[in-house]
Length: 221
Image (cartoon, rainbow, N blue to C red; front, side):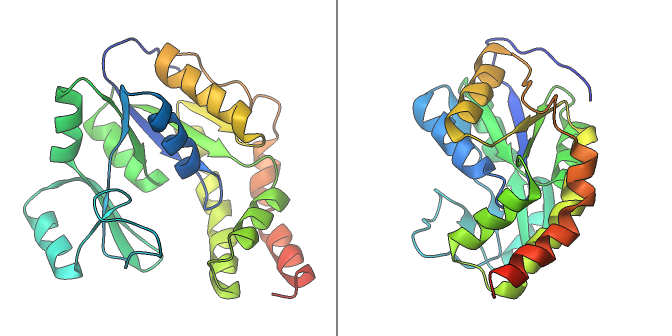
């Protein structure tokens, strides 16, 4: 992984993680506690979930409108994930930076590639679970996905995590408070995360599929 330093000027931070990795909770907690940090709100074609608000969680748009935005060149990056499209508006991002805010992008590895190509100064961080068992337990505990959806997400997690080496840094979200402190230090002080240094990430990736099956069968989902 490549190392990059940070300073007080507004920067773009890319956060990626498998579903259940905790990137959204960590990003929101950081933004809520730091007025100079904001989260870029993405556009999506998926319907809102209970409790989600327009312009806060996502900008919810119809597929035809999303296609029009693609044709107009409005997106810095976009991708299809679990049957729906997600995209980052370049105008939203540029507006935040112009206002002196550092911006967090919560995107997958494919979107991260596009953003890094467009913004070489962006600092990318991949958030990992401490184990695949923990990741499976988190997905089941959310209670919002069906058995097949949980299975799909766990299966996809192995592929997603295999791209961790493309990122500037990796960190582990085991204890939320510790992970939040580590993320805050990375964003505000340019301190590289160190929590993943003792984790066998390759073993984590290779065990994803078998752990998924074991946990789902054990839970009788």
